[in-house]
Structures are given as C-alpha cells and as structure tokens.
Image (cartoon, rainbow, N blue to C red; front, side, top):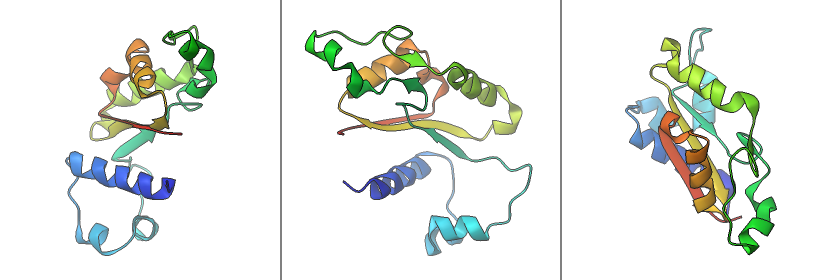
Length: 139
C-alpha cells in the first residue's frame, strides 16, 4: 500500500471529523503548496498534531514482541513496552495550555497488533488525551 496515499486519506478523514472548515484554498491546491504560500506567524499553532506509536510514543515496536503473541500474552505497559519519558507529559502540557485550545491530538499507526496498540494506549492512560485514534491493521 502507498503510505503517502494512506496518510492523505487519514489527513482528509481527520479534517472532515474536526470542526475545521475548508476554504477555497484547500480545495483548489495541494496541501504542500498551500502551506508554502500561507503566511505564518510566530504565534500560530497547528490545528492537528498526529503521533505515530512505535518508536515515537513508545518502544519497542510491537512486532518485536512475538514471544508474547506465541504465549497468548498481552504486553504490559512499563514492563514490556516503555513510554518515552516526555511523550505523555508533552501531550498533557499542550492539552492544558490555552494556546493549544483549538488543537486536536491524534494517533495514526499501522500494526498487525491493533488490539495490543489500543490496549497499551489505555494502559498508558493516553486515550483520554487524544481526540482521534486511527490504528490500521497491516505491516
């Protein structure tokens, strides 16, 4: 599968799901050229921040836990999978900061272990801080 197309499809889905209204600029040109031609400000913040899971929020990658799968075990947060120290703190701080009041937070990932990923998000108590969670099955 083409990950670029998958990312664009996910981006499109998240935009439709949020309160973001599309302007004629978004409809008439590509995201990249729109971004390049849009004036920026030092005070501007993104309307959406998307994180991957493996090696972004936590380690190891879930495929590396095959031994647990063979033994019909679920990975345990803080034991089998470690959250990067600043990951949850960073999300919590931005969610509490008035500057990011209109920013949505999401997770987008692809794994054969979709149930594990959802379970770990719950174990790490991250789901309550996320507006969108998209975990696709596959490699």
